[in-house]
Length: 208
Image 1 (cartoon, one colour):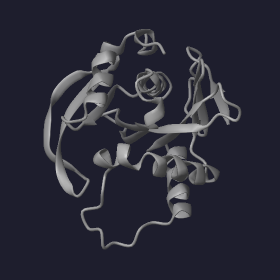
Image 2 (cartoon, helix red, strand yellow):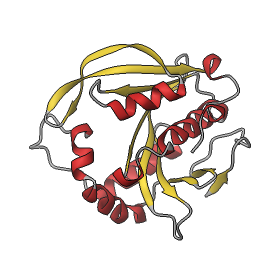
Image 3 (cartoon, helix red, strand yellow):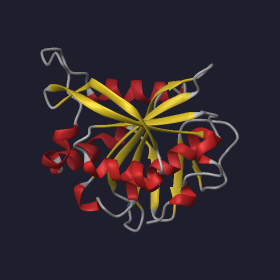
Image 4 (cartoon, helix red, strand yellow):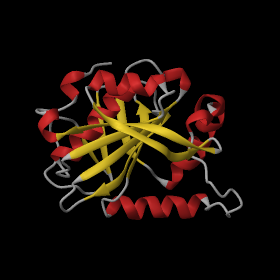
């Protein structure tokens, strides 16, 4: 796995790839991570559940962890979905403290993608997610050549709204009943940035 230390982004996307910025490491998701992820998410269940996507048809048989991991890896190699685990490097070994994923990647005339993320409650409020979003956005635009990155946020999610405000994401509008979350179809607000708006990179706008 290559480790990229900005601003030295590679000219070509090749998965797996890790993105590093000071004590923050975004490492590609591996099957071996699933137990640690399960522990972190269980510990943060109350913190995460209000924002978690849920199947509108819960009777459907859940996908196994192994199958899900293999599908993620296949999509990542093809550049369709890029899942990174957020690790905090001052500790050895660096623990998983969250996840950030670039999804819905479209090429051709669109060249766009959508970002989603979560973080361990004990690490929230330290500026980690804004840096992670900046890292992935800069990689997506510099290495993958994407023109636009969007983030869709529930209007009640004040913590995520502060992230897009800090990074200067532009408000584009609302999507009523956009994603099924916590048992119901929920409205979302859409924020986005294009290459022209990002300029030399988002990392210059944030610090931890």
